[in-house]
Image (cartoon, rainbow, N blue to C red; front, side, top):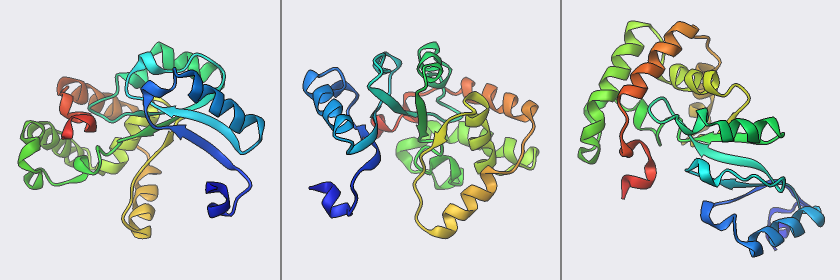
Amino acid sequence: MCLKQLKLNKVEGLLIHNQNTWGNNNTKLFAENLIKTKKVNHIGVSIYDQKFIPEDSLASIIQVPGNIFNYKLLTSKKLERFINKGGEVHVRSVFIQGLILMSPNKIPDFFSKLVTPLEVFHTFCKKHDVHPITLSTGCIFKLMPQCKLVIGIDSVEQLDEIINKANMQVSDSIINEALKIGKQYSSSLWDPRNWS
């Protein structure tokens, strides 16, 4: 039905949205059927916790959150094993749903605990004359060079800006220093699941 609406014979990838669903036999049978009938090239799952990283070969893509303030999952040995077995990783929440690109004085009150680390981040960017997009993406690619980024945009112009800024070079020393700053300011609020 969906393929007909999309006017496609198959899709490149399909991700299961709920990480808890992947262990369900019905989900796996459904996924196996999609692969067998060649309706999907790759099956994956969107996760938040390393314990949900699939260990079977059926899932070849995983989507994980990762940003300068929340990158513990990206350094997981289990994730490294998934990649070494041919798995592909897509990183979302790189800009924390746009929060990291906002001016700290425009941050909503709900995120007041995050204002100080975001001010530190923006001050660091200014000091080293590096754009927040360049530093945010540079940190992720330093941690996981082979990943793909999942980003949200409001316009084609915004996409062009992100691509241009993400392709700018930044030194390893600046990235390493930025990651140390990010590690200092851990908070459950960096995880969008905790925004409601």
